[in-house]
Length: 474
Image 1 (cartoon, helix red, strand yellow):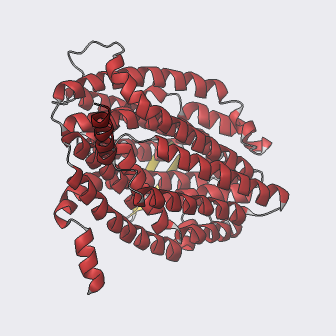
Image 2 (cartoon, helix red, strand yellow; image 1 turned 180 degrees about the horizontal axis):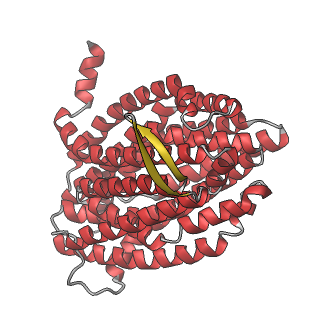
């Protein structure tokens, strides 16, 4: 009874409908992306362990590119969410115009960067020499439509800042459906499939890993075009009528928020690259187990990151409206909800780990190793969920410096140093590397909770102190 009364006092049940209305489309979008990732991995996995390793070996460098682009979007999310909360349509439209410029600059820059480095990235990642040429071709094709991917990411962030999470969901579903269909046609040879007693001839290109890359590239291009059209037609944030030139009054505050987040994403993603490189050096079995386990794990993080999107949007709206009470209610509502969701998610991951691994491979060694590390990380999920929500709130109110400090300390001070010591100096296995990853997540939990409990996260308290200082000076 006491627990129920405390929960009632902590949570604003009326706010739950708003939270879920923003979170469920994002969750469904991520679920579809994960489902397609599962299908991709399973289909490529059917080609053998080396094919799985060729696809997974460069995926961490891809996260570096994607997360850096997403980080830039955080600045636009914070600015648009505040403008939207204050009902300032003119400012929201100006910010959207700068988002268009950002898509053009980032899209072209990362296209040149990824394509020029495609030949050397597998070597940097310490991929087995036998699969480096295939990994290079896969990476080159996958990142050819980088301009379209940048449009999908940045315009999607702008739409979510207005509370429109359904459009990015629809775009994600379309991209994923196209990807799945094209995978079936491009990965495998022409074959006969028996369905409900009927023999169907399924045409195929037989391109294997290269076919998976081509399918994804086409799907990303279609998604980018669709997202751009919807963004351009939006009734509030459409950039139509605005001059397509740098607007420093908008860009400077956006970049002030975005740059620390970009540095955080870049630093942590670079850490993922170093982490994956050390894992790849452990051999094909460890690389395949790590790749598949990451794919499996992504499904069980969907509730957490879906809620983070809602937290960032609603916190930004509350700040724009000058409503401190609403912001505090938001956090008190979302934290216990997130803990409950991630506890259930972690429990399911622990119970289903071996079964999930068998979806992607029939190699007993890969299954056993992947299941072991998944059960390890499952225990830490509720703690990581707290960090996810508090980081989302900070992003929404424009504080990206604090997450930047915390994440870099955890990544490089704990995960990378720990993994180097465990795998290179102590000859540890993949389990030791994932143990360092879990230690990183637990450190984030401690740091974010301490920061929240001290009240330093509250932008209204900072504004009040600033007003008091100004009055003293007068």
